[in-house]
Image 1 (cartoon, helix red, strand yellow):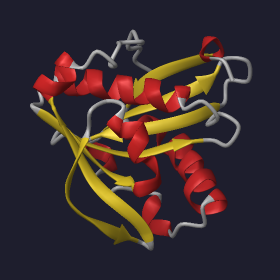
Image 2 (image 1 turned 180 degrees about the horizontal axis):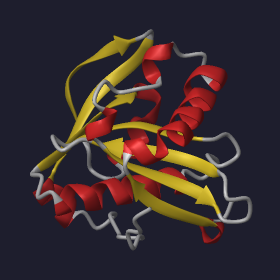
Image 3 (image 1 turned 30 degrees about the vertical axis):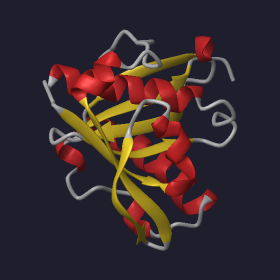
Image 4 (image 1 turned 45 degrees about the vertical axis):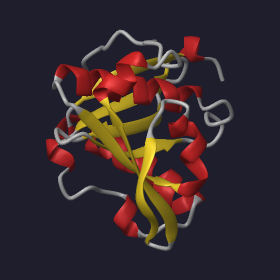
Length: 163
């Protein structure tokens, strides 16, 4: 799928929780058979959320969020939009812009171990031992602001829009 057919918006949980929850349910529960725990962060209302919309249908196709402590989480991209990781990359770009605006010194993510290459592309590095969350092998990764600013692979692709 082409990014030219997508729009990305930064939104509040209270305004978009039903769309975000529906995408998370489709991806985490229906496709990956993960437990209910993956649907919500206990502090979703305090997080900054990004939603990607298909411009042709107006439907949401991906989402992700970041907390003011730098925790990136719940990146969910609908099947059919995952092939190139482009949607996920732009969602992470948005979240990195939020981190910059918040003047965060570091961002971090508990990533499924099968997605480590996606994050290592941006110079995230592993912290500690891998662990399991709801039966999924995970690894804590982090990126310090200085490393992100010097990373030639990181190119800003976004102009943040607010929904």
